[in-house]
Amino acid sequence: MSQFFSAEFLAWLNQHATEIDQSNQYADELFQRIANEGVFKIGVPENLGGAGGDFEQAIAAVREISTYSLTAGFISWGHRTLIQNLLSSENHAPRERWLADLLVGHLSGGTGLSNAVKFLSGIEELQVKIIEKDGKRYLQGRLPWITNLTAKGFVTIIAAEYENGSHAPIIVALPSNAQGVVRAKELSLVALQGSNTVAVELNHVELDPDWIIANNAEEYLSDVRPTFLGLQCAMAFGLAARSLAEVKKALDYVENRSVLKPEYDVQVQKLADLEQRLAQGLAQGNYFIENPKALFNIRIEIVDVVAQSLLLELQASGGRGYLQNAGSDFIRRWREGAFLPVVTPSALQLKTILQAA
Image (tube, rainbow, N blue to C red):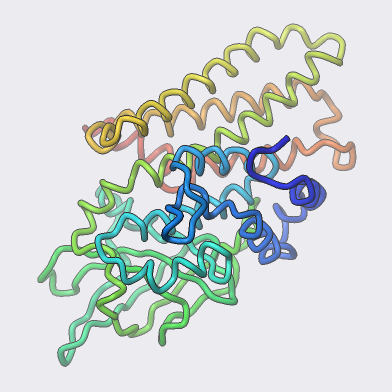
C-alpha cells in the first residue's frame, strides 16, 4: 500500500505510463492528478497551506512515483523544487503571490536553472540579460529547456545578469502572464514527452522587484543545491528500485536466471548505500552545502546504478524484454534511464567539476 498515492491514481498511471512517456496527450492531466494527490504539499509548513512533514518525505514521494513513471517523477521534481526555491527565499512576496496555486496545481512550476548551474560551473554564459532603461529593468533572452510549464499558466525560476555587469547575477521567479513571456511548443524528446518541457523566450519583460528571489545568484544556488539534487536523485532511486524489483521477479520465478543473483545483490546494496548517504547528508543541516563533492558523487554514482540495474533487467527478461507487445515496460524504463546522465547537472558536468577541484 502506498504511503503517498491513492490506488486509483496509481492504477491510472500504470495504465497510461507508456503514452505519457511518448506523447503529450496526458501531460496536463498527469500534472493535475499528481497535484490532486496532495504530493506538492508534503514538507511544506501547514501555516503556508502545506501538509507539514519534512523534506525527506518529499524525496520519498518523488522516489515512489518514479517507480511507476519517470515522467511523473520528473515533473514532480521540477514542481516541488520550484516550491522549495520560493520557500528558501528571504523575499516572501513570490510565495505569498503564487504558493497557494502551486500547491494545488492551479499553476505549474518549473525550475529553469539549468543555465545557471552551467554558468556557475564555468560551462556557459547566462542566457538572460537585465537591461536597464529609463529607471526600469527588463529581462531579455531565451531558455531552451524548462520542464513542467503548462500552457494554462506557470511560474518558473531563472538566473539573470546585468548587461553592463553593474551588479551580481540575480535569481528571479517569473510568471507566465507577464507581458513578453513566450512559451514555445513542447520539445520533441526521446522519452518523458508528457512532461511539458518547453523553451521560454523573454522579450523585453519588465522586471517586477517583487519577483527577485535572491540578489546573489551564486550564494543562493549553493544554498538550495542540496534540495535541488536531492529531489533529482529521488527520481533515479525510484527507477533503479523498480528495475531491480523486476529482476527479483525473474530470479524468483524464471528458470536459469540464478547466474544474475550476485550482480543483483551488488546493485541492491549500492542503491541502499546511496539512499542512506543522501538521507544522512540532508539530516546534517549544512553538510552538503559545505561538502558539495559528497552530493555530486551520489548523483554520479546513481546514474551508474540505474544503468547496471536496467542491463540486469534486460538480461533477466530475455527476448521478451525486447518485444513491443509482450506486456513488459522494460523498453520505457530503458528510455527513461538514458535521460538521467544528461539532465542538468549532467554526470559529465559533475565529473568535470570534481576533476577540476
